[in-house]
Structure formats: C-alpha cells, structure tokens
View 1: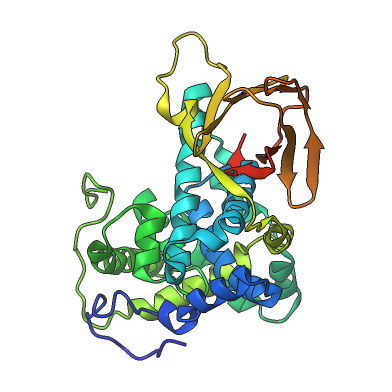
View 2: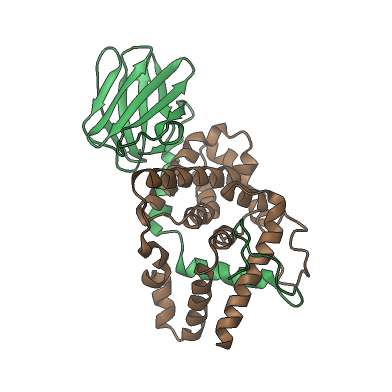
Length: 212
Length: 161
C-alpha cells in the first residue's frame, strides 16, 4: 500500500517506483516461474495485471465487443511470448504496450470503415450495473455509492486526454509510470505533472458541482 | 472552457495549496473497481490463456498488416485484410474476408494447419500439397494459425481479425 500522507507537490519524485513497485517487484520472478510451468504464477500475473490491461482498453473508449477482443488478444499474445520476453521484469509495460497497439489498430479500422460515434459508449457508466454496484445499492451505504457515482460521472466528463491518463493510472494495483508510458505512448517524465493537473481539474469539477 | 491546451490537457490554473491528488486518485481507483471492473468472463479467459504457452512452437511474427501498412483504397471500404507472418525462411500469407480465410505457406510445402480461436478452440483447415489453404469460416475475434511442417510447429502471432 502507498502511504496516504500528503506528499506536497512532489508528485513525480518517485516515478519509477510509484505504487506498482510494491506489487510488481516479483513480476519477473512470476514470469520465469510461469515459463517453467507454474500455473499459480500465471494466475498471480493475471490477477496483478488484468486491471492494467482492462484500463488501457477502457482508456481508449472502444466498444464492448472490440474492447473484449483487444483484452483477449493481449493475453493470448502474452502467453505466446511468455518464454521469449526480453525483459520479464517489465511484463507490465509489455502488456500495456501490446494492448495500446491493438486499441489503436481497432480505432484505425473504425475510421476506415465507418465513422462510428456511438453515444452509448460514452454513457456506459450510468447504464451498466455490475454485481458489485448492485450490492452496494442494496446495502445501507447509499451515500457512499452516490458519492462514487458522482465522482465517476465527473471523471467521465473530463477532457479526453485527462480521462485517458487517469483511467490508466487508477488500475489496481497502481501501475508504474513506465507502464503508464507504455499504455499511452507519453513520456514518463510528463506523467507526474499531467496527472496532477488532471486530478486538480477533477477536484474543481467536483467542488463546482457540490457548490451548485 | 478556455483552459485546454492544444494537447488536450488543462493548463495549470489552480492553486496547489492543500490539494491531495493521491487521495483523489485513490478514491477514483475504488470507483473504477466498483463501476468498471475487469469482466469476470474476460479474467477467466486470461487464466485459461496459460494453455497457449508453448515453448516448443516457433512464433511467426506479423510483418505486414494491411490495416496498418497499406493505404486505404478509395471506394473499397471493405477490402480484405491482408496479413503476412514470418518465421525465419518461412512465410505465411493470409487474406481474411467475410467468407473466411485464404492463404499460402511459402516456400510452397505441405503442412497441417489449424485455426486457433482461443485457448480451447481449434479448427483444421484444408491445405493442398503446395501449402495453399482455405477456410470457409471467418475468424470471429482473436485468432492464430498453428502450422506443422517438416517436424516443426509454428504459430502465428495472435491477432484480432
């Protein structure tokens, strides 16, 4: 876990070890074990990095069908290349980068065939209800659920670049900046400052909404 | 709003004092886990994908994809997808259309070929003695070709059709 203490403005002081390092130091070892036939190691890799791959897919706003295929393609290819990764320690970046390229391919294919602008895609959060969400609704934590929903709405309404960056950053466990860089094709050094701006933007939106 | 740069990111237009970005990011992370988690079925598929790990197979890498490498042809919006995979001296050309797959192994040679559709889906295709093959089922979703030729197993890189 990251400490919840205030870090002043030093948002990019530890770009390489941020969050993910705690959870991801063992990635290289897990990859090597999985290569040697350890199914539990593979499971740990999937559990640790599935949310990152999913975040990259979601950051690119694909349709559900396309997004699901990109996610699958990424994992199938990862399994295929498992024993051949040049840098097993950077498996997270490999996954993020592969998912990104597949997303870009989908988008390229779409613009070529038809200019799809499915408004339903933009409204997803308010329409789909996950089991977890239903559970929360059922419990007496309605306030909390409402707060989360409002937060998510404002997040979805952010400018596209901010929404994209934050969607990758909020994968769980938190990705390293190297992984974020691979996921979005932006320089590691620019992530910290951009993250800070985008979070402040979101805070401002929430405050404005609260005051209204 | 006038606070957007050309790059789409907002300018620095807020006071930093008292703002805890970490806390907000953590709240957002929790919201994502509740409202937009990895679908259970997808996670399961990723687990099953371990079966696709095959150290003995050579990988034929994608070296040409018309979706990326070819210029769009005006007036032909649904041109077939052309793919080329390469493993050493061996090349596999594949054309994906709405009707299925057509392809060829080069240099020409007999081979046994299957279309993989996931960790648990394989379908043999018809191959002639020169390595030309056809399948009348278009791939739905990610696919790869597994070739057995000259005592070797070669699998093309997984790709979304």
